[in-house]
Amino acid sequence: MKYFLYYWLPVFVYAVIIFYFSSLPRIPPEILRIIPETLILHVIEYAIFTFLLFRAFANSKNITLKNNTILLSITIATVYGMMNEFYQNFVPGRIYSVFDMIANFIGSLLVTIFNIKFYKKIRI
Image 1: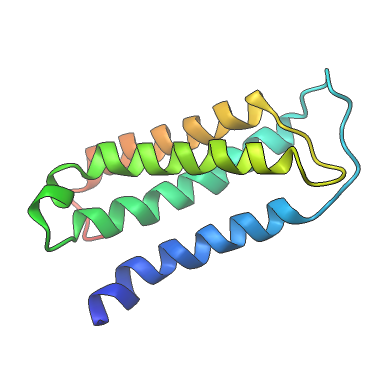
Image 2 (image 1 turned 135 degrees about the vertical axis):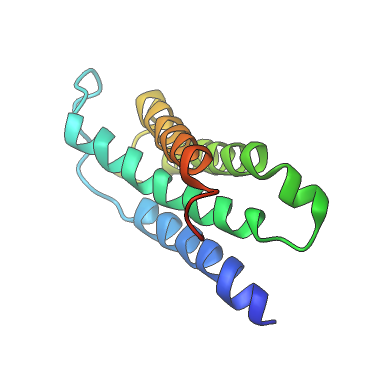
């Protein structure tokens, strides 16, 4: 139980927070305009999500999950980001954006590269 609370609860809470903020309607930006600030926020948002996933899988007692930490972290974060963008298509005032999905993936990739480089040196 302590393992779940320390490693997995933050993952689920953060996923719910992402979903909550994606559910809030807002004025849609012009379709052809890409706002760099929003893309940067997506990179940061999914970097944090992937870090939490990486941390949970890397400390798993299940050897299969532990051995596939990188693949699972990136895949789950990316698929969640894709589903989130698809869901936003049904929220009034929100739009489906391929650019947001790419930014989500870039955030996942960047934090994974960081984790691979420094994982043995730091305790997650």
